Image (cartoon, rainbow over all chains, first blue to last red; front, side):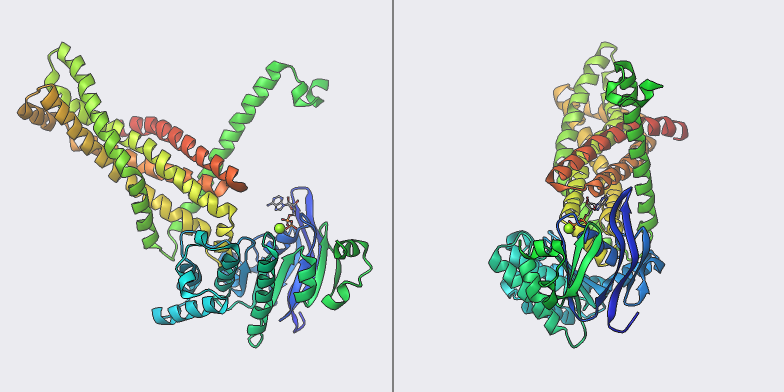
Length: 248
Length: 272
Ligand SMILES: Nc1ncnc2c1ncn2[C@@H]1O[C@H](COP(=O)(O)OP(=O)(O)O)[C@@H](O)[C@H]1O
Ligand SMILES: [Mg+2]
């Protein structure tokens, strides 16, 4: 695996029963870049994400993340390995019995030996950097707006300083202004962690935002990557489906 | 051979009834198998660190909170009505002084653990399915797994442990308030002499009777909370799925309590 590749798919096929979801995928995701996987719904995008996380195992082929073949990891090492990832869920998936503060504190409590004062400092720093103030920190997810929840979800995902951030349809279901805010936040996050290295993988069908914020764009259709280009070249692709998507 | 290849709906009705009956038996057996595997995974994970004792206490309080009031209410009325019913039967043969021990023994061996089991299935078992089911459909379970936390260990283990511990305690509360209810009705309404009520109770009621109930309650607690959490994890889609899971947790929890009660009784009678 060359230096600048962080995730590599080798002949990856995924079937659910007889149903082929991903078919012989070969592609790689570059380190410290923002890569978006575009596709119509049902194309297999979420399955692809779950394979990267090792939550779903490919039927055939292998996935390498940070040089590690995921299929070679047992249950415990795989769970530990997942701490390389920060995941932002479509609807944030905050723990609804915990406040915003406790949600961000949770991974730090579970997986670090920080002293309480250090932990408190870190939680506040994370939440402040995504624009949640002291007042918002005390709220339960049910008392937060969709955009606020996304911010808290982002802070929680960043808590353990992951090498790879994964975003599942970050703007689906949000109003245009909140969508812009979330997209800006994704770029800001990537910028803010540039020095230690942060790779972002986004799943989306929001073509406009994707063109704006991505370094690379892959187009997934019926289980195949039919186009994979630097973002600036993507609009000029002559693949008919991509054209259709771009001009939607 | 042609009948075999036809669509099942085209078979004559006697075949269809047999086929549907067979299918539901297969479904139930498959469900039983999956619950057994789930329970096996619980035993595998519960013994492994990290131990989250606080979560067990949280769940104990939750179950207690949900159920204590109803347990006290049903327990006292069950004891009172039992006192009446046995009294009028026993009066006919002049053994009405035995109302105390008969009610207390019925409560201790059967009514307290079984009714407590049914109540906990309805209150806490359903809540477990609803909580975990909601966490499943809102991807909170995935969020745990992505962090590397085993969701079964984190969500199911504390609930099953707490349920297993809580049910015997609740059952003892049921027995206590039920006996107090029987005592009040027996001595104040039915005018059984207080001293005789006590002495007969001491004469006929043994620790084994209570032990039998506590052992049963222990198993009911395990089964009800295992079923509650299992159906929570089985939820796959939407609010509707959560509703269905909750419903199944209650129905199967209750059925398991009643069926298990029979087998436990026939076993415990022999060893106690
Ligand atoms: N666990 C599963 N079992 C069976 N089929 C699944 C499972 N997960 C996803 N699928 C199917 O795989 C296809 C792709 O799903 P998904 O990856 O969620 O697509 P997308 O995220 O692009 O909308 C869909 O047809 C879906 O029904
Ligand atoms: Mg999806």
